[in-house]
Image 1: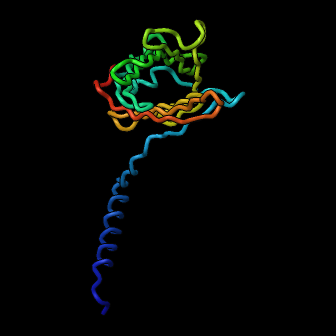
Image 2 (image 1 turned 60 degrees about the vertical axis):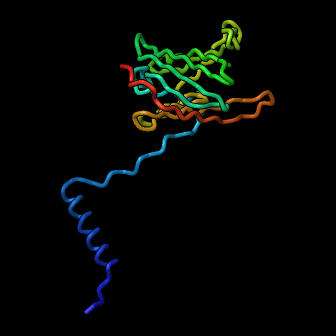
Image 3 (image 1 turned 120 degrees about the vertical axis):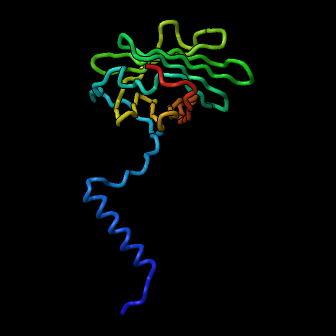
Length: 187
């Protein structure tokens, strides 16, 4: 007779439990996925994924986080008329240091993230007519990869926005903002 082994008993119990789960059509849940912090860039000639602004409904609402060592607030309105407008406010040393006016805009069956930056006195950081357009390059579920910036949900009340900026010397630097929702989702 074989000696008693608690490990062998645990193994048999686990196998039996898994057999029952699979036989009943219930499988163990996949482990939660971490939100993507990957940043992707547009490849010339590659078509954009077909989506609408409403596909980003999860991002509508008010969010708070930190970027560049400063507090950041991001307010996004729900999609209406093919657009989801938003406003970013960065606050450092108790003062506004930057505003970003943005919108997810439907274009040719896909969406583009368009933004423009302003100083605390609403002085434009770009030429009067220049907006930064970042077309959608990929989508994975509710994660949207625009040219140089990614929006990814992290559960129902958190989001991760990752983006790449180039410094004056042309070097690229990735930044990750971990937001928490401060208001219920806006529909």
